[in-house]
Image (tube, rainbow, N blue to C red):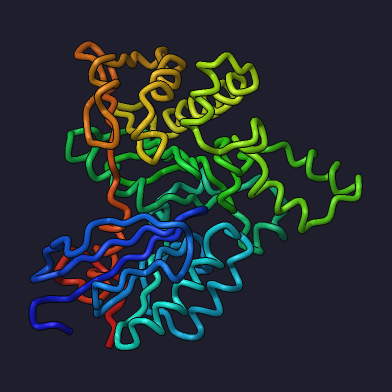
Amino acid sequence: MTTGGVRILCCNVGSSSLRTEGFISVGGVLDVALARAERGQGAEDLPSDFRPDVVVHRIVRGLKIDLECELITPEVEREIAQAAPLAPTHDLEALAVVRHAREVFPNARQLAAYDTAFHATMTREHTTYAIPQAWRALGIRRIGYHGFSHGDAAARLRAAGARTAVCCHLGGGCSTAAIVNGRSVASSMGFTPIDGLVMGTRSGALDPGVLIYLLRQGISIDDLEEKLNRESGLFGLCGTNNMRTILKRVEEGDPQAQLTVNVFVDSAAEACARMAVAAGGIEALSFAGGIGSRSPQIRTAICEHLRFLGLRLDSAANEAAIGRDARISSSDSAVAVWTYDVQEERMMALAAMRLLDPACVGAGTQNIS
């Protein structure tokens, strides 16, 4: 390790991009050493001007869904590859980044930080599917994803005094989480990241009978997987998953773009309402993700659907809050509404610190010898 602290590089593989950020941990305190960078998804896009002691990789699925962070051994890499078909738009590329990082930074330890761990506190009522016991015995249950985003938002909401809340992450992937005392009790996503809200290219919740029908029509399993993960959602509705482009088309009078926005907004609002029930009512609602933190128009439309909760926005505050932390609810709103530029990479670095030295930032998982 460096004498000036532990140098940590976080690699966050999304469905279409690779975000990286470097930190230096000194005495349990994180200092940013390399500003966040977002590039087209590709292992070759690792920064060359930061020499880490530890490289932390966001793993969306994996097999150890309740584990926060661990050293990537050959066995762990095999486990991630085994689970990768359950998160095909993320984890195969994440493994490519792991292999490339091992070549570029041969002296650095490679760690896996699991996106599902934040949801380990979900209640059994919300993780159990009403399916045959033989299927449940295979581990089929609701899991929950976007854990680093929801975890950061939940911590901020708790610091703001909210005991019960809904976190709404809207981006290429979308999900909501019910939060009680800073912990997840329910999630809109299920066994895989396809479930829940309408997303950029993923369908979200779908009647299982549709899949049975399509299979009986002769569609292959591979084609089904491809279309549900990469050709559905916003893209399936209007040919693009770029919300800015869709909203521009709405302004130009495109009825299909308007329908797309309506479907997306309805899906998000219904998921927020469902999570409010799971939390037993809410004191706060937060928006995060590329759409959630940067689209006042989408936030307004969603919150209009949630007015029955006593929720009201401050129009000026909402319009001004683009890609930054801000309270956007009005003074008479029964629910505080926030928008957060969540720091997923920072949450990954903290997970690594808890693994490397549990004493420095709360309870950890296991030490690396």
